[in-house]
Image (cartoon, rainbow, N blue to C red; front, side, top):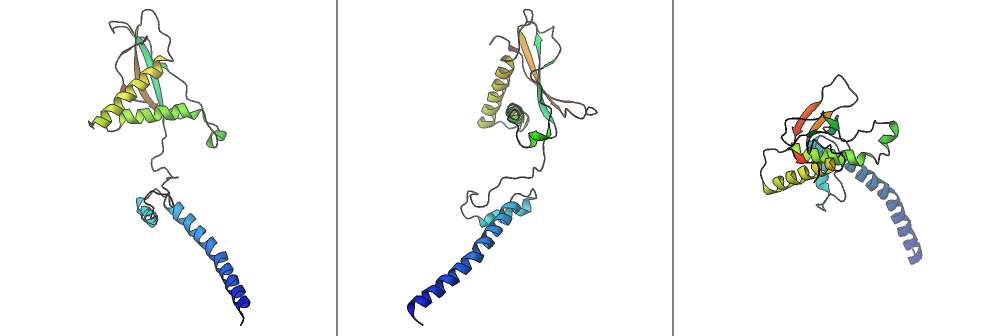
Length: 191
């Protein structure tokens, strides 16, 4: 055999191997990525194949939420007199947008609701934790909620204070009672 024919033969063999190996490697990578998203934590072993240590090759996106949110977080407020003896009825700070099919694909208006959900999670979870990080996070969440509500309410002359309550409610299932999670301290309407 002469040199050029051997090179052509090797190049053809390499092309055939690459033609079969690339789809097999990509298919294996896809399967490992999908298995790495499974809510059962026993599938987390698949991510040990990712030697980067940062989840670059096999990410942890968790497509399947183990405990999906089935209730919306609502903020309601009431105004109070200076001596805190008289109160207005509870009022909604904002109205949750009813869901439509298109919202499964595009829902930029959900950002505010998502932010309130995240702040509520900060306030409600790990209530007993008293590390400086938890304390700072909770104080920031209280300030954020109070400033958000303050910017959306209109004060009344006899009611210089307001109070906020965090409520969970499904919104679509009216047979289910709302869950009253937390009532924040009184704040001044004019901050």
